[in-house]
Length: 473
Image (cartoon, rainbow, N blue to C red; front, top):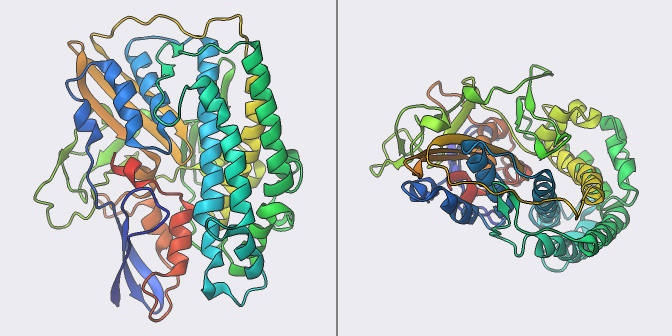
């Protein structure tokens, strides 16, 4: 058995190393390491609670609106505040725009370029992959960047800027759109739909949403999604990096009539309710100090000695003592979409298909949100300062379930804990030796003789769309 260290990974936000034990040309076990400590949670202690709205979004330049939404919801819960319904609608709309942009970027700029590598030159699809996804040159990349830039005009209009907006507040949003703004948003969404239907899917988004079986998915031969499906079939990406089929979602986009995508826990092939009180962070293999605890009782104290046996700055979040995979696939499985349910427990193919499915479904949701804007109504309610209390903000970032837990004592932050999506997916082992979702998915991945950066390992890692700066925040 040989030991292989893979990393750093390009096209990943932050630092990532993967330690592999390889035997017989396959990964026997894996340890995933987040080698950079940041400490945003510790920075928040002792500050005015509203400072979280400025500091927490700077955890990440990719999903900062999701961080804003989680912080605002946590503060609202601590103060017993319900935001104005139209404010909640706009907060959901701009977060959904950010998530769509993240999914688009991942597919076109982070994931698909790996198939342009010379090792695939003999494949029938390779020339088309090179033409579409060569970094900075591929036609798909140029089209995606143009579409993304146009869609982000909505963020300029409603959030003021991106990233690190202050538009989302516990009581709603700071920008009240008028009828002209509503018209511009609807026009922007129509243009983005046109990109999706002519380039990414090559068909109406409703046609992709209507796919109900893996067999139907594998017959999809239109747009850049069709090229992905062809590649996935040729390389058997369905069996590569398969997960345990245990998924968690906090739901997505809470609106007056309920969330767009439902929360829950999927395990043993069925849906159950989600008990967030059963979440705890295990530190046994993390360079962190403290007991296993729920985030409300958690702490962020780095182990400067970096004790033996630990191998990551990432904590190991567990639900009822077990790991859970999060992400677009998890959301779609838990929301009950038949294609996602049929793909549950799948590998690289399932995760990327789940992301494409969510792109299509979120476009429909965005159009409905835009239609629901009522300029004459209130978008913000006044919220008094919170002196004592605690609250959780549980949202759907592009990469999965994101939670902020805040405790406020004497008018200042006494405790602040964050579990990001990649903290769930890229967690180290826990005290029972159970690996995190990525560590488990890597077992069995092929490693060719002399391959120091196994391409199969890269496909599996990228299928989770890691953001390591969020992981260790």
